[in-house]
Image (cartoon, rainbow, N blue to C red; front, side, top):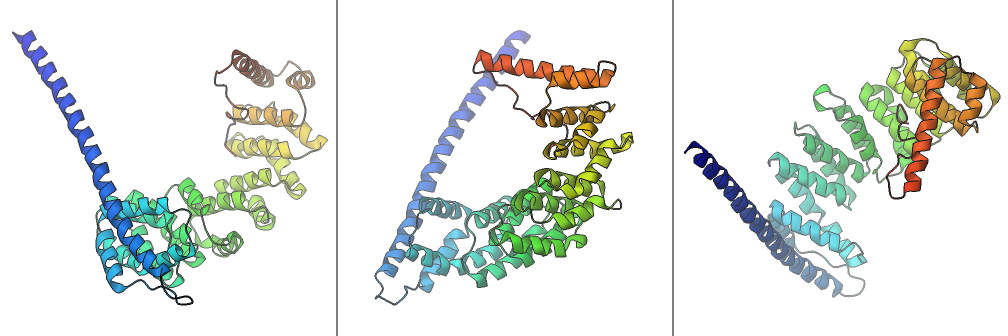
Length: 388
């Protein structure tokens, strides 16, 4: 009897899951149909207004009436209609001047929506910030006011709201607002991961040289985490900051992560003026400073000269695996084969011998994988110790 009860119970659970999946699938289809109807309604209203603007007398710009702005404000304050409006904007990627003028005149609606969504729950607020990041305003007056509202979004506790608000601020392209936002993000209760901050800065729509100038001017006012993210952004964006980067690199009072970020900068933009300190890092025998040696070993792949090769060969004797790995990869970039390295280093050092054996075996397996065809092999450099 007990076995039959278990079987019936198991069958009931399976039947319930099947019914749930069917109902959920029907619900998703219904959502798609409803979204389509909302998109059609918004499209009809927008196209009517754009057509009326096209029929304006020559030399007279078409004006969006207050009634249409009020209708859009009411509709778009509901997140389902905002989704429909975004779908419409995606359909109009190739737009003419009249449609762009319509969007510019619609910007007061965006300011109204910002204040409306500020009082909404976290998911709706996060989506509105995402919408602004993808479709920033086109008029300076509304942009300035929107930035203040977005800074309020940035102070909320919801993670995705802060992330999307930060992206929206970057898409607006105002250095002043970004400086204030970075100071806000540097507070202990509002920090985001450095990669999130850097990736959002890379979508900045203004002049990057102006932004980088402001970042350097405010650099010491940021927290260490923000400073690290800023250095990563500068590394991806500009090769014209060698002076301040060298100051950070040579300053022993600076945080370790900042100096390592500076090493990565000079790996991307080689400068003979910093070769001496990179060589000092890689020659440093202190095991507690192995990160400096490991990243410097990678950077020195871009620096020619026998002194560099000799330092990399010496680094092959390091007891740290990451230092040896990066040094062997850089020596290969300098044109030395693993067989040549083995001959130069000799077979007495177990650390160097094991690393070269590992690298040669990895290369052999990669060749076998390519010969087999279709097998995924690890790209060269994927297993580098500390990512540059």
